[in-house]
Length: 98
Image 1 (cartoon, rainbow, N blue to C red):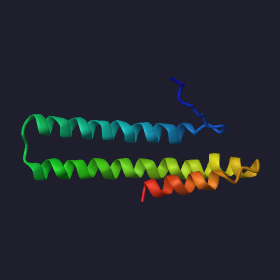
Image 2: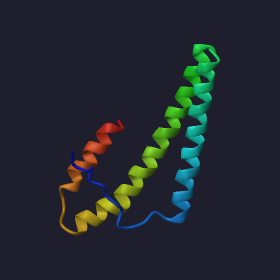
Image 3: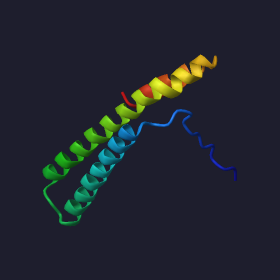
């Protein structure tokens, strides 16, 4: 069995961006733990769905932030080295989030 290919960014995220993403991820994790508790407590479906929608929205916002960072750094760097195939990757990523 082969090992998965792991990529790393050439340009690190700023400390501010990194902290913001971590804070948002921790908040979503807390929301999802809350939803899990609601399910365990047999809470009203409408309330569970409302909380799930809030968590989905928060994850979508994090995805947008990471995609923006990807475009500004990784994609620009790849294009500057002549790798225009990265455009296809970006299109695939954008399709996943639309």
